[in-house]
Length: 457
Image 1 (cartoon, rainbow, N blue to C red):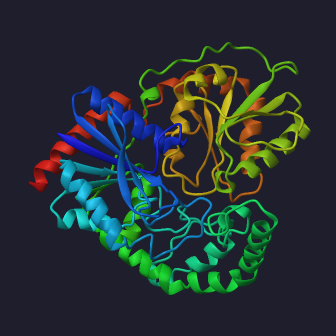
Image 2: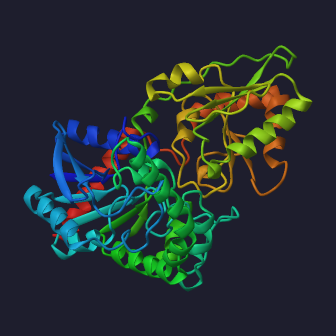
Image 3: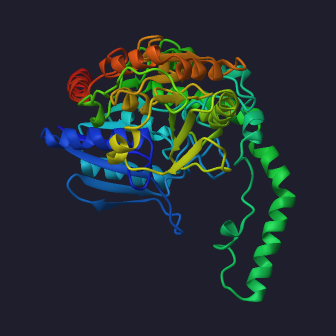
């Protein structure tokens, strides 16, 4: 079976749960004897000409340059190019597929793929699976989360996407030197002056361009077209029950959607964390840890505020932040910077409690099982799917990010109740609800591929 996997880049180019999952699944399927190819869609160059080139071998990797849809971070959302591919881009993509002849095309992201390419594949008779690991097809900001920090449950004819996008940090024309460089080249005084003028003009015309681009009709049409194209898939896989519920509310009873818990290779061998019973003392520091809370919707500010309030009452607590995040030096807060997954055992060994403070509807949060499997109980937000694998008083606690003081209360409970903390630590590696070991997950994906391929034939 030849499988083509498509996403917007793998490590080290990109970090996070999705690139790790795609890498692990691709490598394991290749080890099991499948012919697995990979296509990176997050590629741009100055030519702006759509092209696909081979970039690596064993497993074979390809790069799709200038698809017409840009990565969502750092650029202004453009609703039409996110759905409709140019004739040149469509021909480039379909010619590549025709030559490759995959049995299954498996999308893991559509962040850099015009969505009508999915329908184009189905029109040509190809078998298509899409694992919905974010909300990019139905939300221009990817998060399904409003600018005033609420879950977006609006129906298509109610959408007010232009309001959210206007308040999104990147919802504007770029005004730094980078965007002007390709237009005016050179380092002389005249070139610098012209680039400065272009940046000034960008500031002046920005409100008019943004106002035209962010019309509500454009985003409502984007939602309608996105749903239509994704309904064409043979199968849509949602990675949690919550995400399945949200997507079903948008798609209706599409008949091609199911829920499957995803997994990482590091979930394969749980490693119990050794704990000892001892009384709470001033010298016994309780260490809270959070991974990758560098975005506003990840709840990093909420966590810092809750911790600082707790620290004012209890001095023997620390907060350790891992990932691409830094901030003002605050007593008790330790910034560890970026990390490699292979170092997690060492980095997390001294930690007592993990915190996932997300404000938005996390589709799963891969970091949760990463910590549970290492014997670290969790405090998780009920805004995302984390309660599907965190059972209160067994392997962690829940909190509601909309309730002031809820996170602080949960942190205080574990900082002051050593018996409860020890019990949660003992139970954490035995967590099975909502978590699938990696080898079992790959077995399941093999079955899904065979089933979908058989049905399509």
